[in-house]
Length: 248
Image (cartoon, rainbow, N blue to C red; front, top):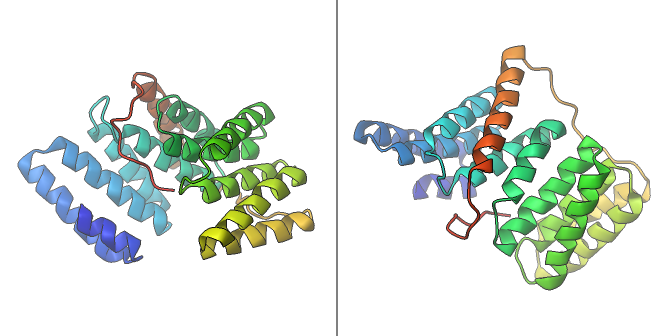
């Protein structure tokens, strides 16, 4: 899987897809269920990155069914799929999945990622109660462990969630601190994004929300069903630090 992930880091998605398809074929021939699940998961990631929505949905379902119960990567799959839905504007579908993942992850860096995404989804879903709680929990980790790599990107997610609620004061607070830290750390992409968010907030207009694209009923129903399956499977997962670290 390493070569495929290297291609993804280089934005060479077609080469990544081919590498993951070879890994899938190897896993099938050898009867390696866990490797097959990971290959489906990686193929989902490529499809999501390249906006192949239907393929991404198919691979997400195949990965879910291939992962054994309690597999360490299951929360990561749930998180990745929820982000995929959230970025399409399906906040209400993504929200309970993020909540379920948050109950399982224990490492501060991982919790910072999931809680900030939870805040963003809650903002889009108009769930002020969930947003407020996730906002406070995220800031607590930021204050306790400001050195974590995901701090700046997590602050931006808080800003996006705030913007979706039209809470411009919170947008300014989170995005301005993200800008300050990103400038200090030399994170140019985050710095530029924070500047764009601040500019939009100053004009009290924000266009981050993308209305869900029309989808076939079968695709929508299958996605809603997968969300429910993920929530139920995660409810049976125990927390712990035996899980792969999640990327910002």
